[in-house]
Length: 462
Image (cartoon, rainbow, N blue to C red; front, side, top):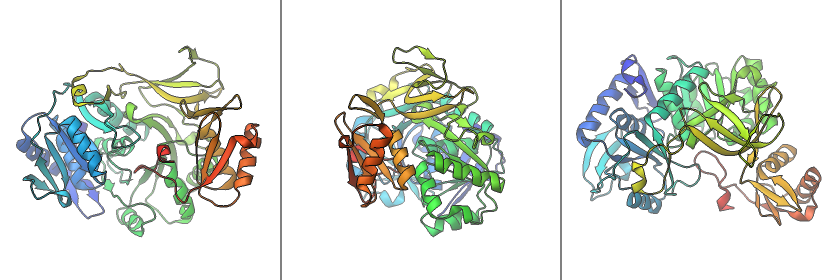
């Protein structure tokens, strides 16, 4: 059975959410049977997700019985959702009760969610196709990542192993479960027999902390933006006796913040674990063991168990010398099948064969630890010099303690900051750091950086 859910203590709580819904492992399995009895065959469904028991139960009910779910945010634009329905032909949609329309007939209702039929016929599905997720960008894009059952099982086993998870864990999960990072937290902890705490609240909501403390959460996992918020909320002074593990992924954390959280973890007897991954690699592909959190500050570590990382140059030749920048390539069982851009693509087989070119430009140190420099496509050539946009963002954020996003072309870099002060200072500072004339830089004020549900900056909106 998926994630070996049938081997867990059936009476143990598997999921609880901030809406006070609770479900055991036995109840998940029984619900899955009801779910399949209504649908009756392998087909494509859409699951409209918020972080709650209803969404997670629909996902698990589908996965247990080899029904293929496309995970989408329940709050996504309705026009974009309609376009995805038109392109992919889901036979059913599992969605919150609040989203039911007058003309729809409810086939199953449970956990404040309902199953409705679309009247469409599913496209043929590849036998190993298990799950569809949107790429890291806009959830309205028809480009989807195709996962196999082997991808998800390998991911859950590997994460459980290197995090040393057991059935006593209670992870706080506010990362959207329709994103690969959030889903990996759910899968790995259920595989370990843990109790997952689901919420759509964020740390700025007092209810978030009440939920965390009441349920004695043992870990938090999130993206760089989340840790920037925690610092501003004076997280280091909080009394959180149950918390044992702090984990970060979803992008590069600036070195200063990495060091602060690593020192906090070391001083309080906790673990700070940095991870790296992509949707195309079923979430995590590298990790930095907590014992190296300070000595290898800024590193993403090395490959996860059963995975292999290496760098290649522009000609595709493997780089073996340390401190030489190249594109990072990952090889492992969690590499996904490939993309789908239409319903006809759902029959496609494995196009990657376990190898993923990540698009991240990376270097290694003399000990073989990997350090991200930037994205392959996140580079400009200003005044003849190759300049990394991600690197410039980190330089500015570290020096001025301000949110920052860099875009542009080979004539000008546009630097968006959330402060109306120090624009000339910022421009001169980055000019000095890159040794490029200041006329190549333009600093712009923006009240708030546009971000997706997972906290990643939406550069296309700038």
